[in-house]
Length: 371
Image (tube, rainbow, N blue to C red; front, top):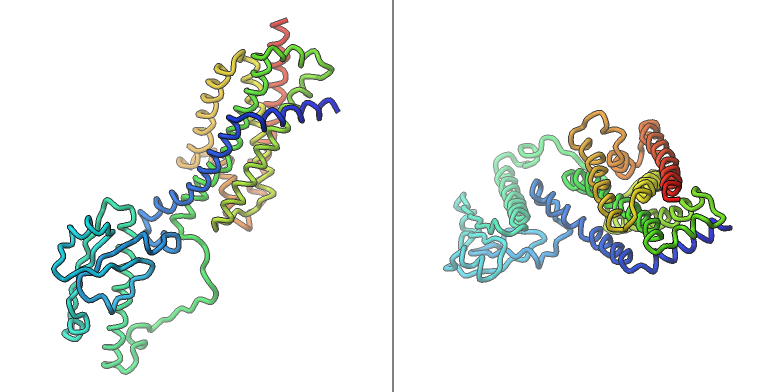
């Protein structure tokens, strides 16, 4: 009962703190915007990644000449006069690209050769996407013309152009590989770890704040053990961090990014929450002001980020047990093999339990020194 009373008081204090509410809003903005950032970055390698995410009105392509035979998808084609200067038109009409075509496309096709020129504004992040859409339209027209000529020669264009044909039933709904690698390998773990990192800061604020308010001594002499004090502070913080992670995962799924193995993923994040809360408790034992505690948390989070993310890029021995790797595997693979996850889970559980015990002993030790 005493433990629940302390936990309820701590939860009320957290929910009434404006700084934490601001942090939650900032995290929400990060989660909402980060998928679009991933799309833009992925589009550098594959511009077609953006298809389906960008409204046609945002990609305006000017057409000088006859574009009636071209079907340029998911862009807005702006007709320009035959005498228009392409580079000036890019600036004056706020275009992503300008395509110069023959004045009469049908006549040019009949003569056997069509020459097109694409002028691109390379300072625009959507220029690669515009290039990809125009290229796709030209390739489609090129194939149609080849079929007509192949039919005239052989009677059956498929015999010449499509000797092997692949039919795919159903719809390919998975995101492009560039987007998948960036999102699941880096950004999704970063998003889900945001509440965990914040939990360490909330823990130090909760304990060191008691010291600054001169209420820590009252808490220590209350009929509560150090373990109950830690649990009373930790439980609401862990619950809030886990609820945030579930909300961020739900937002990602709403935006069309599947997050698999959600129960196991939440268990993993719960262990990480406990580990960082325990580290926050240990830091609180050596801090007498929130300013000092915040410095310690900042250094700890920098070291933790390096420990978590560097093995992923180096693919060294720690790669398989890195929390980032575990999160990426669980979130991206619906048929994950649990035996591959067990070493990482076991290591985190041992680290969290050990850190909690060390944090409790440090609080006792520092309090005994003060007395």
